[in-house]
Image 1 (spheres, one colour):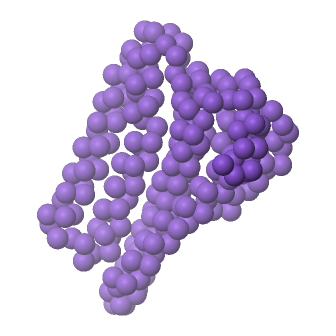
Image 2: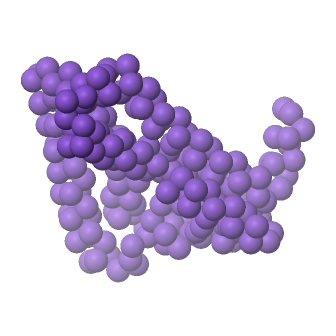
Amino acid sequence: MTSWTYSMETANNVTEFIFWGLSQNPQVEAVCFLVFSFFYTVILLGNSLIMLTVCLGHLFKSPMYFFLFFLSFVDICYSSVTAPKMIIDLLVKTKTISYGGCMMQVFAVHFFGCTEIFILTVMAYDRYVAICKPLHYMTIMDRQKCNKMLLGTWVGGFLHSIIQVALVVQLPFCGPNEIDHYFCDVHPVLKLACTDTYVVGAVVTANSGLFS
């Protein structure tokens, strides 16, 4: 065990977090369970249908459908980071998540969320080229450039999320461990750190603003 790992374990007395959830009313939670289960199913089926249509229709040659396929894939991943856990928690009284699981959720939420935003930006650029430079469209948006732009969206999402997580994991958590939210996000978690988080919060906000 490295000295860094040892120092982190001694600084963190918290091994799990407890979510407050959307409501403490069982009847409201039952309604939310049905509603969110329905919408999550719609998201999965809708995006899967788009991906299947692009694959079966051999539409990958078109940059628009190329990016649309990966947008649907990322949207499924992004929704699956929080929705299943939240839906299951609506059925239980105590909503818990391990410290490691919480950090993984913070990373995944920002990774897929930021990547999705970048893909939408790339798709907007694709439409701009198609409208403003139609005669040069296929030259500008060739497959090699599309692959590079797609890689850029994943790299950008990774850089954003790894910075967010790196800022959080260095903080000591010695209690309390109740998060006023239904999933782990940076700012609700920062409120639980037993140290001053003003600078970290400012850097987190600046990081999100920079990528935006």
